[in-house]
Length: 233
Length: 223
Image (tube, rainbow over the protein chains, first blue to last red):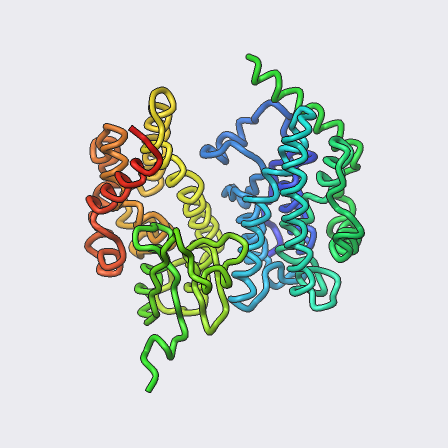
């Protein structure tokens, strides 16, 4: 399955969704060409490869595009099944649980996190979004206790599906804390997740991909400004 | 003596008109799995539902030997993996990724747009109408000349979308457009789906759906 394969990943620095694909590829030890898009523009290749959403990440494997970050992660796990650790668990019930949490993280946690980053210091809206993020992280703290069974990650001994789904947001959670002056990953309230976050950020497959928080804050400000400009047009 | 349903240990918490619940019913029927169907009263949710889906408190929930699985497409994949006869997802990883993509597309787009179509008025309604036609055309493009989205096989994307065929009449009537005119291939596909017993037994008549939406409209003071 490995060997002479043409593998390209269309992405953007700072995108948590792109990070998911890169972590998965790192876990499998697979080489690829990273094609960085320019913020604010969309390349011909992107528009051709993802005509439905025109969004990154897109994995292009031997010319065939795969879109949507968690679908890409599952694809990588299936194609390179014999390389590296399994990203999804092998038991169907455990897989269903992993998928459930991946959906929860994207449907519930991400929109609130995004609000904090993009909101214009509207204290009420930001405070409400922060509460929602904390509530979500609280649920994940409980889930971590259940699924890790005392090991380092949600996936057990190695980085797995939920680790990837949630871990890609760690940088942005820290950036949001700085931007809005709120505490989201509180050591007192979320001790297990704090420990997990540290281990996740230093994992081999992850550490070189973890963006600097200050750089994310700068990017967050740029995105906020662009959103405001678009709103006033 | 245990019934077939009891032996399988499968319970489905559901709501009669829910297209998400119907996905699970269709998948179970495609696999020939006997199960116990429990109808929920969404204005008075059962203790079992609240216990099995404490986070969202929503149907459908599949309970297999006492363990809950939530989120309709997660449930359908679970069913596909546990009962390996009549596979819904193809075996090739790229085809699987494509199937997951389009099922996810149905999830992200169809229901949300449909709700805007019956709930909103004026400009927002016109936007919903345009969006719905675009969504259906994209699906028609993906279907092409195939019998089903899964090719010859009634597959994952077919299961994901089939329940919404009962909502086509509502979308057309609320949106004042003809799905057959805009998407003839999708319309033909919808007919083929209805001819499958697994679908016809799980999905309600379009007029019943329309009646249900009528009640929702009254409830929300629309029109």
